[in-house]
Image (cartoon, rainbow, N blue to C red):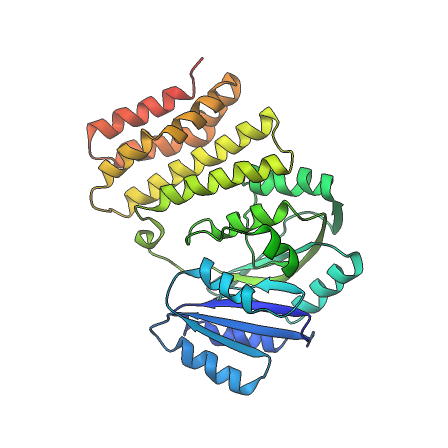
Length: 341
């Protein structure tokens, strides 16, 4: 019985997939299973998966219709037989001792979650990304205060899956919604964190995140904002379970939501999607966005800081890009809402 299941969603990844799989086969920790979930690839990805499965019995290949990375991970979890689960995207790769170090820490401390630093790879450049300044182990209260507040609540630190080791038992208990290919990592961790009682952080880069260009039109679609709203509703419920419901928490959460919305609108305009002004107008008049704006504005001094330093610039960029005067007027109204008394 393997001790760690590594789940790899695969979609049209023939260019990067061999390096990813090779990094898994090169792990110094041998008690692993590698679950390659082919998510309806139309290139040679499935053939690559099957080729490696013939080479090493630890590789399991699942092939399914294309439903997106979130549901591919869900299917991989259902197939996993190990007590612990890690995830890696098909264009990324592990350092050889990732599994050995992560597994050793989670077993030694009986933690529910282990996280490590990572390398950010762009072309031939590789840069260390350090999350915290030193190794640490946190109980529930400190985990919420130090980790959850700086990732889930305000989103200052990226929320990803591929630098962590999880307990399968807690995944099956906590994670009921896997999302729809936007904010899926954020949504997964938000739910999982409600059940994590012990957190361990390893101050060492053990995995490589490869920045692969993606077209703006793939990131922006008409359902994206509804997905964001659904994720926010689930997030609010999870924060309540964790007791993160102070006024400061609610304001930070509202700022995260509004920031995400404004950045999304900016990307949407850059993608030059047809009828973008109509869609933007619908979002700017949305009830949830308005509620979040008013929530922020209840602390006037903080609201002014938000407008000037974070959201104000994005709104100005949107106004310059928007074609219709109605959109510009709505954006001006959005900015004024932050200064509401």
